[in-house]
Length: 367
Ligand SMILES: NC(=O)CC[C@H](N)C(=O)O
Image (cartoon, rainbow, N blue to C red; front, side, top):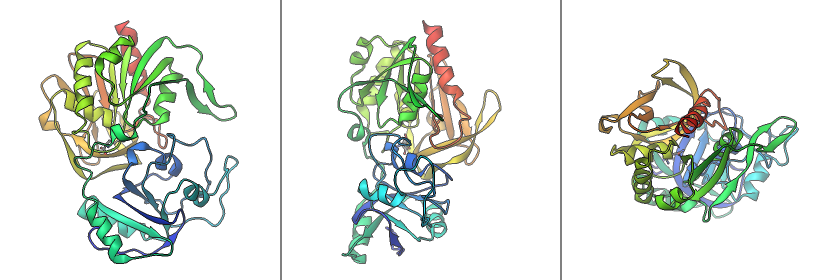
C-alpha cells in the first residue's frame, strides 16, 4: 500500500504485478460482474465478504467485453467451486484473463486502513520476482484517480446496435421483440445490464463512443439519450460535458447512471469532487426524496456531485443514508435525470429498477 503497509498472501491469478487505487466493495455476491465492470479500470478491488469464488466463473455473468479491474484481493478462496453454471474456477478465470490476484489477506484490516485514511494506491506482486521496495515505489508512483479521463480509453471505438434483453433462468438472454423507442447510449464504459434492461423495455439501442459529438447523436433522431457509467474522474471529460449541454438544449429525455450522473451534473454547471473512499457495494441504503421510500442499492463510485454547487434548475431526488451525499438529480425545466448508484444492479438488489421505467415514460410523453 502507498502508506507502507505490507500484506502477504497467496497468488490466485496471473503472475506479474499490478498497480491501482485500492477500493473495498461490500457486496456478498457478484464477483464476476464486479471484475468486468469497466468503472473499475485502474482500481484493485478488495471484497469484504470473506468467501469468494464459491460458484466459480461462467461466460454469462459478465458486464463487458473483458475484465477491467486491475486486480483482486480476497480473504478465502474455496478449495472447490460448485454451481450448475460454472465453467471455470475463479482462479483459472483470473489467470486466463491475466488478472493478478491475491488471497489469504486480512481484508478487514485492509478495509479499515482504506476507511480511516481514505483511498490510496497499492501494488500486488505475484510470481518469482517479489521485490517489496519496488512494490512500494510502484504504489507511490500511481498518484490519484483525480484528473484521470478514462471514459474515452475504455469506450467502444465504433457505434453498434444492442439487442439482448435480461437473463432468465432456463432461457438465458433473449433477443428483444418490439422496439418502440430509439435510444442513443453514450458508452463511457457501459455495463451490459444497463443495455439489457433498456432493451427489455423496448428500446432500440445505438451505442456510441464516448467522444461522439452531439450533432452526430441528434442526426440519429433518438427518442432519448442515455449516459453510461464509466471509470475515472468525470471532470476532465470535457467532450462529454459539451455534448450533454447541446443535447439538453433539444429537450430530449436524458437519463444518466453513475459517471453519466456526474457528467449530467457538470453539464448543468454543478461541480464534482473526489470522496474519501467512495461507495462500493450492493447494500447501500438510498432514499427517494419524492416518495420517502428507502431502497437498498448497488454502488460503485469514488466521485460525487457537490450539492452546494447545484444550479437553481436542478433538484436532488435521492440521497445516501450512509453519508447524506447526493444520489440522484433531476432538472426542473428539462426531462433529464440521473442516479449515482446502479439501478441495473448486477450485482445487487433491483430496488431502483423503476428509474428505467421513468425514462421510458419520459420518452412516451415526449413522443
Ligand atoms: N461506476 C461509475 O460510473 C463510477 C463513476 C466514477 N468513475 C467514480 O468513480 O465516481
